[in-house]
Image (cartoon, rainbow, N blue to C red; front, side):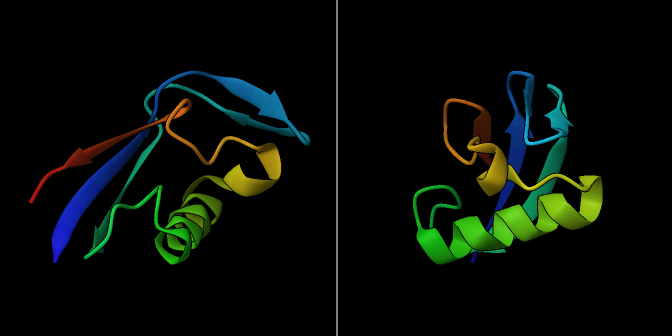
Length: 72
């Protein structure tokens, strides 16, 4: 199982929420975290609990806004 760091690349404001560059989370997964739908849901849930933002609702749960780095 690989570890990934997902970091916000560009700021966005939508649905009353804001994301800023540098906001990041880590996740362990056997699948790429943004392109694999169940893993993307986990990423969204982690961002919700860590920062109070719903990336899916904002429309930013994609590689345009998020950088994915494999760290382990």
